Length: 199
Image 1: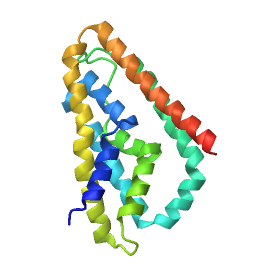
Image 2 (image 1 turned 180 degrees about the vertical axis):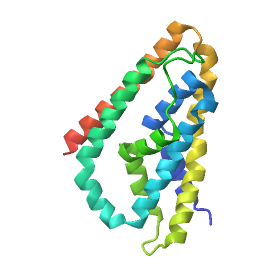
Image 3 (image 1 turned 135 degrees about the horizontal axis):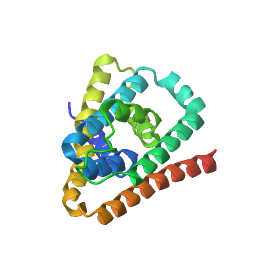
């Protein structure tokens, strides 16, 4: 059965700007849509694995997440700052060389330190999974989450791919990469600051 409120929530959280979508847009610009596919799929795989773990062990995970929250935030922010540095030094589209898009495994693992991803997963499980849910309900929830998440994140990769034609000039590409790097770094700093204020 289709739960429109679940689909709306997952679509809204998946399509709005965040670390994943900024990285996908940048990867689309620098490497094209086809080479960005593993990154895109990795986001959905990582998201699905989080939903399974959280849904299967919600009480334990809530205590675990609370205890590990500072470490998760520090790891996620550090990784975002490293990605921002890497983005600022990305090369010309199609120019082989140094750069490579984030792969399926790296993108899937990033979900485990992505603060927006954790917020999304916890809310999905708390709001949309019945209290006495079994594996069938968990599987259904995961399936719907992936079916909605994947096309939403694809929008960002496609948008980046479409921008490639306009960013062939090295100066324009450098401006784009520095802008995306600044947005990623700003996201990391905003998350760190929010955690510090809330602590």
